[in-house]
Length: 112
Image 1 (cartoon, rainbow, N blue to C red):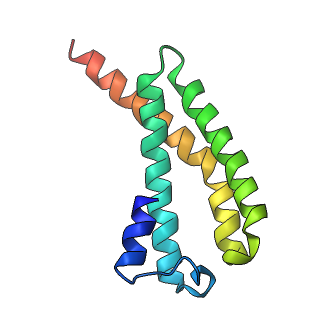
Image 2 (cartoon, rainbow, N blue to C red; image 1 turned 90 degrees about the vertical axis):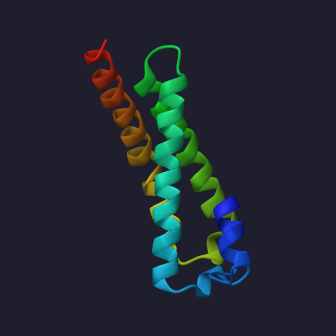
């Protein structure tokens, strides 16, 4: 939400006229949301008491459900490509966040 707020305050996009945003802006928004999803799931995996990938994927499932709800509620606010992309990227970004944690965990244990 902070990134959206900054983009709106700087005039890069308008949330009220999001559907009219340029393809470059839509790709930028999709890109930073993907990065934030990966980082959030990485953090979930890092903070998990056990089974970090499972925790990351649970966050991905929650993200998918919330993305579907948001898409249904706000279908007319954006183009279908954007809405569908937000839904589809939830699980892959969760998997990637969990995988990145597992890789960094393996490397840190090699130095112990």
